[in-house]
Image (tube, rainbow, N blue to C red; front, side, top):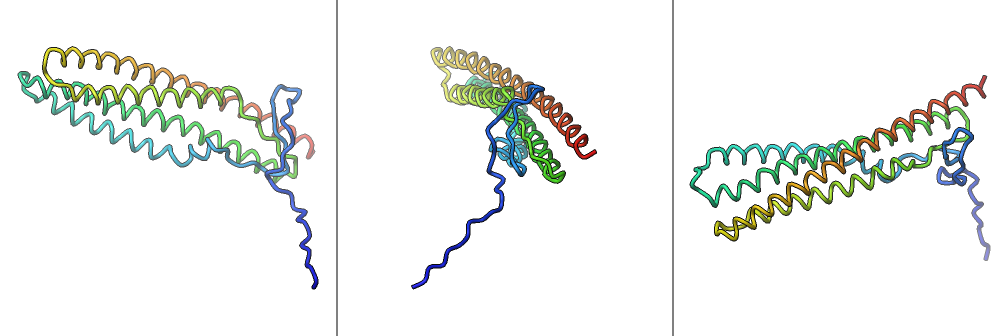
Length: 223
């Protein structure tokens, strides 16, 4: 009986990378023979920015309709007013949650385009591909984005729970307390989201600085 041996492939996989090294200009890069493509957050950003944007419009539309209903509700209808006072901000902030998530995912998408495009250009030039290691600002952006989403979602849930309270004196006091807590949570979520977006924009600046430097290096070698 004969055994057929398949020779090992000699092609270079784009997954083969060198350890991260810090260049003389301070940028920490990962070397590879081919571009690394999108990382996980950037892949998610490419797929989720539009659905989150759609969620924002749906939340705002529902909140606007409920606000119109609230404006036309009899002021003597305490139960309806109490319920709507929670539902209107809950749905409006579902919209804000969606749009802030869409912006954050769009920033990740932009960073992914720079990462993949920069790798493709270096590969086409026949140079070792240097990919900027995820900066600290990018990692912080992810943390603030996730925290902002969770905190804002908790605030929305508190509003939805508050909408179920009755009209007794105790229930109205509990409803008021829930409204105050929900407002604080929602605003804290907005602050975290905006901080994350600011960090994402700072990351874009770092990526542009690195890529402009890298392009000049490749051009100098080719000349």
